Length: 372
Image: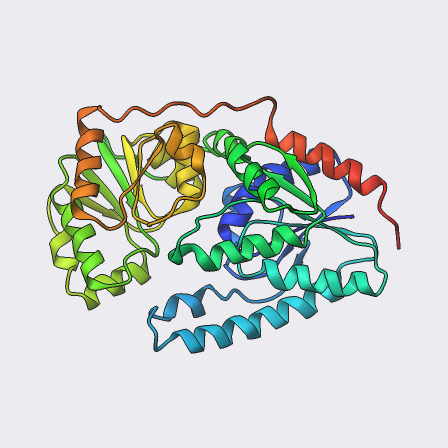
């Protein structure tokens, strides 16, 4: 049996075309939700079946309540270890002998899932591990944790689906022992399928950029530079707020700077609504790697407020501009978007649907797996 394992909303979004394709083909598969985020509503909005196995209550509220700082890091580490132990034992108890295990990316649920399967294989359970999105590397101090999780998954997987030629080169240069399979970026299929879902919100009229910041403003100086750049933007800004960022801006006493006519604030919304909002925009300001990929598919300019970039093609084809939380860099990018001087090239798709390629491969693998 093929086991699709996910815990976060981003993982479920990227797995959504594969789940639909496997269901359409009546493949022998099931989904396992690790419970890192609360994905219940997202299943409904994406018209996906509920998970076959749900391993427990969401941890999203716990993580969101912690203000990232040196004082809270030990508590966050303890919570991560406790939750990781739960995932380890839960996954060990629900998979069957010979099952294929498909994990994704660099989230916190990936290492304990893989470790559980490796232990079972020592006991002769005959599993094979598939890493759905392999080879991403940021290579900076800010990305070291993400890079290490990716490398751990890449080193311990039997099959590595890689979405870009640069990520494929990363895997080959590091001498990964698993079978490397270039699949193409599944975000192509995610965007195509999701934009077929009618939005439930009113999309703003006129020219605007979407600002969606989730993690990059960790100190007051960076926060001020970012807020002032959005305040001084030459083009309207739709700012997606969330409790963590709101709390941080209030703590730094910067929230009042955003109270200007050019900035429209919107609460977090359902994924299809958000994707339609981005599709109608002129560009994006973000620190989300997934949103960078969505911009590439939709040919939208993307200002990145991180200090690292995991996909070389996004820079080479003019999709992203890496500014960090730098006032001049962000404002310069916003001006280029406003003036129409930022040109984005379409990244070559290289063949058929990535989802269909992956589904073909998984179904073929499953046929030759040992059974219970």
